[in-house]
Length: 336
Image 1 (cartoon, rainbow, N blue to C red):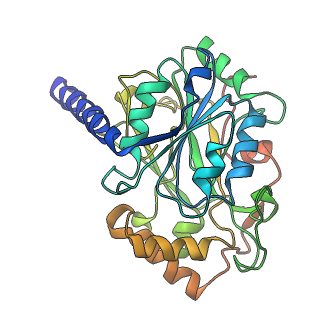
Image 2 (image 1 turned 30 degrees about the vertical axis):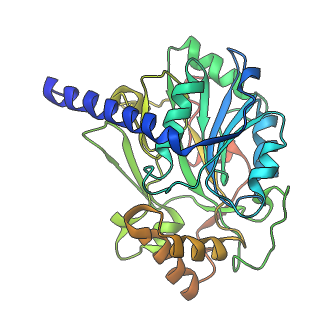
C-alpha cells in the first residue's frame, strides 16, 4: 500500500474516533462498575436491544470462558433487558435512545467505550446471539489463548461467523431464557462459502452459508459478510470500521497467512435462527435501522415466508470445535 493510501486510512481512523467522541453524548450510564476492572481483566463489549431471553445464557457462556467484565449498550429495549443487566455485578451498562443506524450500526458507541475502558485489555466484541469458539476451548480458558497471543506478539484474532439453525421450521422448538441455544440450533453448512480479499483494508471477505443459500440464492454477492475480528488487544488509537468485520489500523486485519500456511483462528457460532427470529425480523423491518435500508431483513422475511426450514441434506450437526477444525472452518495454527 502506498504512502497516500496509508495517510487516507489514518485520516479515516481519526474521523471514526471523532465520531465516537461526539456520539458519547447519546449514552446515559445506568450502572457503572468499571472501577472494579483490573488491568489484566478480559472484557466483553456488546450492543443489544430486546434480548432479555438471550442474556442469561450469553452472560453465563462468557463467564464460564473466563471473561471478567461486560460493558453493554442497551439501545432502548422494552423487554426488561436494561433492568436485568443493571442488576448484574460484573456488568456496566449504558442506555441510549439514539439511532442505531446513525451510530454506524452501534459501532460509534462501542468505539467510544472501547477507547474509554478497553485500552490495554484483551477485549471481545460480540452480539448477544454470537458464541465465541476457539481451539481447545473445551479444556483451556480464554486467558490461555490471550496469553499465547501476547507471547506471540499477535494483537488480533479472527473468527468466522457460522450460522447455526434447527432441523425443521424455526418456530417448532421454543427457546427459553437460560437455555443453551445450541440445543435447538445445532446444524450448520459445512461448505458453500466464498472468500475474497479486500484490497483497501487487507481483510478477507467471507460470504455464503445458509443465509447465502436460502435468502440470497440469485445474488450471493449481497449475502451478509461472515468475516469478523472480535478479539483484540485494544489500544485507544484503534477503531472498528464496519461492525467487527474490519479495523484500523489496517494491520489488525491481517489475521491470515498470506504465504500458504495457517494462522490460529476461531468461530462465532451465530444462533440468530431460533423461534424468536420471525418477531425480531418483523421488528427490524419496521424500525429500518439496519444496513442498506434493512434489505437483509426484507430477504429474511421473504425467505422464511417461502421456506421456514433452513436445513438441507448437506447440513452438518455440530459436535465440537475439533469437528470444525477438520472441516477447515477454524484452525489451531501453531498453538499446541
